[in-house]
Length: 633
Image (cartoon, rainbow, N blue to C red; front, side, top):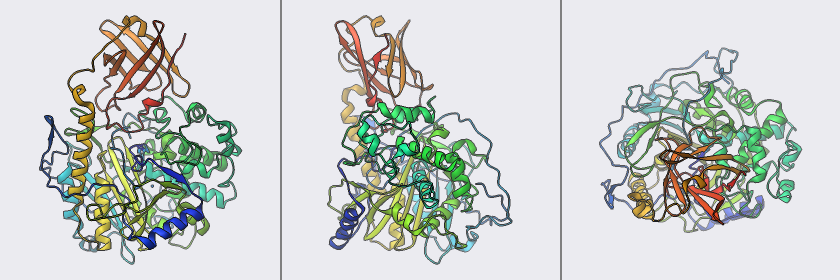
């Protein structure tokens, strides 16, 4: 979610630190180094030239894609009925699927009735200043910068938000919503912010802590008695705070196949399935990003407040902030002003080739991990609210100063290489950590509070430099990390930092990732690996069961074998031989990632089945590798 393609997913070593320890570590790094960004973009400048690897065109192709011009609307919203944040480190390629942050993913969504609100004359207690023409004149540097990124990486559209002290907010749309159509992105266009929703979930819990209905250090079982991890000791120790900090011991993206693409699993199924997900590391010892525990956190909110997660977010956060465009989950959208979804679907791998339209595949159940859809206009309200540490423009507080501190206190240390910034990468941070729904890093000598989000066909960024009063949101309608590079370029401008070519850095990063993926795939790009079935095909057919996911059925057909992931309607495919006693899927174009299905044979019978994603670029939310399927006899 995830929600997938979450930016901090590639960090491998982590240590869980106490607030005092992490605070000291960050202060020490501040004294010893010039702080710099958390991004792990490779930054050796290269020209935007086409590159090839063994005959495959590497993306982006840097075509002369001409985006529609920026379309600020300068409209003042008034008397409107008021409807109701991944980290910043290196990230896996954003391909389908949370949130993610992952961030996801694409399909037909069941649309529910949108929440109705009473009108109070003005937008709400946190109404933004009118967006007038002089705002756009104040940022003439922004248009060519955004256009350069769009042209370089084939991005159809962006939504951009910028906050600066003592100046009106900038909220602007660029380009078109969907390829093949002419509708333009404006400041009210909705984007799926994916794992940037996690900060809303943390904020909701902080509000309930202030209300006395939740305690950060209370065991999760106090609120959800049936909650259980695979280790009873971890179940007993898991607190509400632990749900948010990615150090539970679960492996990266564990259980995301219960969420992406669209599945029949309910929230209750996801909570129940947790007890069958094996732990990979010790409790509170290492960082590994997950979405599933944020789903649990959303259920804590529901049980403690008596409201569903989406109703709580709508009534207690979106409405008071005047976020009239935004909705907590996709099914509540009631406007046509929605950004489309786009991805490179190959050949030869997803993440390469021309940009194409894809459909969303997330459902309401991912809300707490990555469900919110927001506009650039509304992002200004959210980011300012965070900079103001929970205080609305009328002086009212939605959460206390103590909770503001709690949400930005580093909790789980991310393992970087410790090099910090240099001439080749001014975006490399000295230290990074995960707090509560936010990442905490350093960026060019400043504390950076940020998160990323990724769902099928879109990627987004939220960033705050609280000590300078800056806030930035970058929303894109592609599932690539271009939004991260553009975010860095905007932050650099706000800070007056030395010039750095983030387009060239991103291009180099893409070329390296794709080259490594093609090298890893090798000859398999053209021909299957050697070997084949060692038994008659009828022997492979059968029903196989995993305790957390459910059943997968392999069927004998006239042409060979086919597979049906019974809880994931889109995951149905013929199977093709792919090495010794292994087969690969061929799901419909744009639907998730393909899997390699490996059968283990003992005494002439199938004893178990394991899987992995076929592509090295696959998003971590396609966690086929966590399935442990056995025959249902």
